[in-house]
Image (tube, rainbow, N blue to C red; front, top):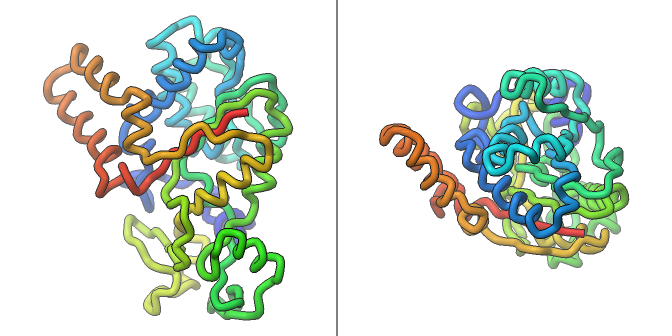
Length: 322
């Protein structure tokens, strides 16, 4: 999976469109109110501790920079002086993507916003940072296990061989005998904890807190979903040409961050989180400044974010602090 997504010719090696023109949608591409509501939550944290006004707002896996820009825009609406005291950063290692991000942010804000790029989270060494990410944990490499074996790919065919004992021992801690075992959460959490003295980390992804003991790994191609083990799926045709993902084991994520010294502030559905962050209040403010047609269009987008059968319950929010 690591080679599929991040190898020399990997899927994410070059800039990929998200939304109607891409292979999948995200909450960020659905509505700018997603970012505004997270910024609203950040603003409440700033009001509690003034020192955060001089801290960092950092996004990991920012794609083109939509989420970060939507957050900056709402923070400016709440308090224009904040964009003068806060510092802004993006964790992104691909030069082509960094360039696209800077171009888009310049289109939104001109020279008013300065962005610092970090190649990896372990490069971030600051006093305080509010770190935000959308759908990054599902893009970490994983191993596939079942019946004491693990998957290998040979000539675009999945083969099952004896599994690594340490991998099976780790999976057994979560009562897992089948499915995806993510690799890298522990290292990622430790790197964030090491460099950021005080941190709030908010992330959204799809998955559950409990292990399902089944496979969720799948391929997205032009908004169609193909289970990895679908007999009709030809790996040689989609390898590095389509997105591959799996449901996140949030129990594993929480364990990794708590072991790294973080505390869990909240784990809840995306719908509950966005409502608690103030997305409905933001929509009501929007109605006072726009036409009825614009209001209805944005309200429909927000329904997609909140509806239990679409994104509202399938996606979860996790908030850690240190």
